[in-house]
Image 1 (spheres, rainbow, N blue to C red):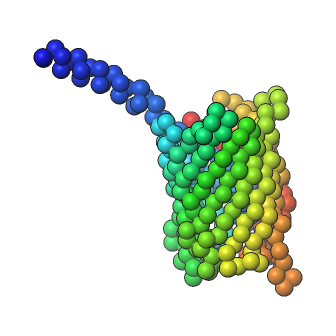
Image 2 (cartoon, rainbow, N blue to C red):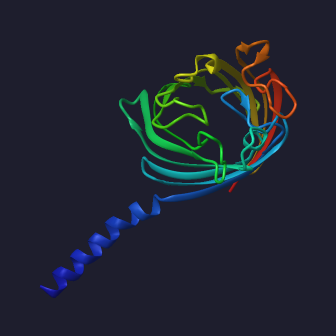
Length: 242
């Protein structure tokens, strides 16, 4: 009986090892010449420093990411950085179709805006081959817009290996800002990236947003200098993963 229990314990321990071993923790750090999110500059068209960590085990993932920003202080608030916390699950529907569902909260500690900039979204995505279609739905007000709960963002993107170690990623998105129609817009990007050294990836992107004008001023004009934060531009980036 004792030998049987010892053998059973050893078998259970051995079966647990692959599960524990499959867990991974990864870190990343980088810099960009302009932090664009959904086509709109978060850093007043200036450089930003970024970094994050990701935990994965099987299809489950959890992560945190941070970036320097300028838009909240420009709007009269107090936050100088953005902290994203997220978690979800990835799996297969068929061998050709994968899915990704999760929740993401954007936190701006001390933002002190009249309507808090803190935003939480749930999302779902389907991928087929190189293409991915994703929908994100806000369950809170969206980035400081009053009465903007239930806003939605549709994102169509793809990733192509074009040879020479270069990956090309086109993107088209539409942001609906509920209750604030003048601030809804379409954004686009085309990004080329390449690993230039082990763990180090360089990227070049053309990005912009088709934002509306309100009384002759762009909807996403910077309060600091009046520049259109959605104007088409080139963004360079370096990211190190370890």
